[in-house]
Image 1 (cartoon, rainbow, N blue to C red):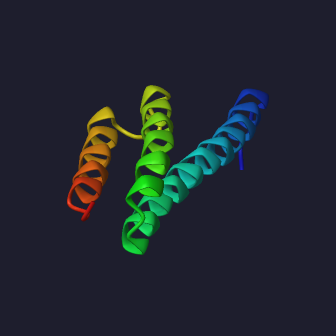
Image 2 (image 1 turned 60 degrees about the vertical axis):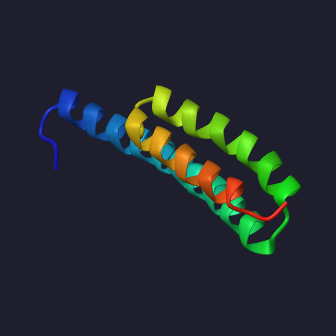
Length: 88
């Protein structure tokens, strides 16, 4: 356990930030899963609609440096390829 007031405060702040970042990361993963579910269901229009929302979420998470910008870009690319590979 922290011995100084400063260390106690930093531990408290770190726990709060970790909980906040975990919630954002969870929301991001859920958004990605929604796109994949729409693709598996075969609904291209729904998949495209959810993809647009998901790209926004991925960009926001990358801007906050919760994930690396290249990871966000890679995920967007892979999701886009899944949607483009669907039958019209």
